[in-house]
Image 1 (cartoon, rainbow, N blue to C red):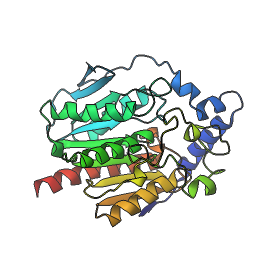
Image 2 (spheres, rainbow, N blue to C red):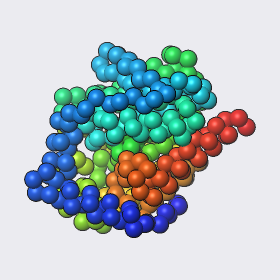
Image 3 (cartoon, one colour):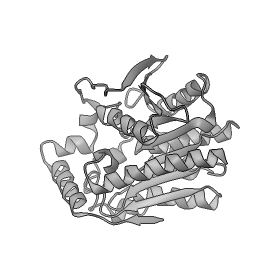
Image 4 (cartoon, one colour):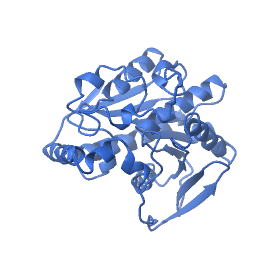
Length: 308
């Protein structure tokens, strides 16, 4: 486990986030996902030097961000967060560009997978599988694919790998999980110890972590829902990042411990004073810059290991 010290800039942003989410008028709507479910954003401007293709599949669409000069060394499958109720938003399109840059101009595929309440489990899980299979059917091999996800998307990335292992399919080259939601039973100790510390989900039971629209009576200990309860044997190398103020801190710690015991290469980085998916601040604060730098190094290591 690697601990990254907090900075004054990070603490200021954390306090701003906490004040915003505690606002009586709008904070509750953010905490319980209402704003995320109904968010309408301006059209995203494709950055210079890139093209964006929309791939329409039977149940959902995907966005393929490609540099003009594509680096074929890998492709990143980005599974966005949102508590299984939030659709793809511009934050993740911006993250896709950053992933591409850190991978030295690799392409990034981001599924706009189905979400609850209209489409509960297994819709998102099935769409993640479909996206991976689409890559395999379009010229990519498993050892060229990095699966990356944050929050629910981080758990979904691990659930996808659970499925691939169960089906005897090749695993991706690596897995990046930012503040992954791996335990929908909410059994980790940090759900208690960080209940009043977490500036996004803390202090209320009316937040996304308590939302049951995705699982709807399912056994939440299924590894395809809560990967923590699965077998990590044979998993690819994993980079897991989490903030120590998160209620979901235990989700990362428990998975890392279990995966290491199963013989998986894992780097668990705990960022002091940080909140849920602080990485989506992109390059605004030192902690997020460090986190993304760590992502870039992980991508390089995956390529180096493949060449050996």
